[in-house]
Each structure stands twice: as structure tokens, then as C-alpha cells.
Image 1 (cartoon, rainbow over the protein chains, first blue to last red):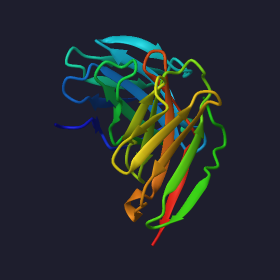
Image 2: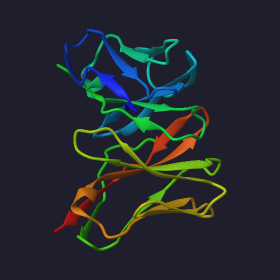
Image 3: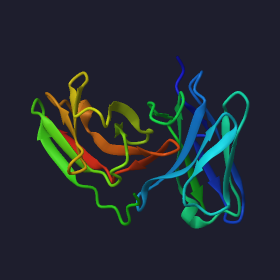
Image 4: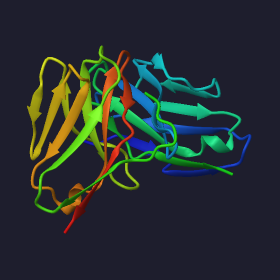
Length: 113
Length: 111
């Protein structure tokens, strides 16, 4: 059974640009959550999608957005990139969310210069 | 759940010894908890979980203990091996499948 796949693994972008990251969950999993990991703030919740609907959102500005497709694949988008957006972005998939095991991908390392 | 200016505690153990990693959680309403292991350059890896109606759960070489009275979780690793060296995170699941992570603990295993 394939795990959670995130693409790309590494990205370098310039301030002001936008970026789209992709996550393919484990087959059959309907919940996809996104997290940002930085040395200073640790792991922080961005948002969760379930059956193409955003079900929960963390405390991030509106520049951070996401969506989920009918096949449960998810994308997150960051617009008008800032240096502070440099981080490891992690995607987690779970069967139902709401108290079921969540499995993480390897992450996308975004560097904003 | 946010941590600012993280300085991760470090636990150093001798290979073969048992390790105990502790975690305090914040929300008394949380009813599901997970321990993750993160190695350098990788995403967090699920280790073991526990629901609030239990106080102990055992896996292969790992045991999680939950004390709801003091909002405390611990992860016990038996016969610690060099491959166990990593950062360990506890996480509590809040409403909407939102995981709130602890700051993490670095486990170093000395051979």
C-alpha cells in the first residue's frame, strides 16, 4: 500500500511569487491535513479537507489556501510568498479524520529567497 | 498549542536501556493522542496512539501511558536501539482532525 506522496520534495521561490504543493493521500483515505514545520514554531496546523470540503482551518493568513479533488488528492497554495514562509510543509492523510490514525508524507521543503 | 522559540529537550540513553519520553498536553477535552517519530529529512512517522478511555496501550517495544488527571502522556521505548534516535512528538487531536503537536524531544542513543 503506497504511503502519502508529496510533490515536489524541494522548491526555491522568490519573495512575492506564489507556489502550489501537492499531496496524494493513502488510497481510500478521505481526510487530508496540511501542516507547516519550522524550527522556531514547530509543527502547526494549516487546514484539513474531507470529501473536497475544508473542515477546519488553523491560524494562518488568507495567503494560504488549499483544495481537495474528488480523488482525495489535495493541493495547497501560498500566494505573495514571504521569507517567513520558508518551511517544511507536511501533508497527513487519514481514513476519516476525527480520531483516526494520521500518516504523514515526507514533506515539501520550501525556501523563499 | 503553539510553541515559540523552540529549544527541544534532549534525552540521551545507552543502547539497550529503556527510554521514557514525556509530554504535557493542553486541552482536557482532547480524546485522542498520537506519538510520532521524526528522523532528519523525513515526515513524522506514526508510532502509537491512545484514546482517552484508556490509560495504557502497548505496541512492539513501545508503550504509551495517559494520565488525564494531570494531562500527561508518556512514551516508553524498551531496549532502545540506535535506530530509535530521532525527534519524538506527542500530538493531541482536537475537533476537525486538527493535530496539536508538542514541541518535541530529541532522543539520542549512545552505542
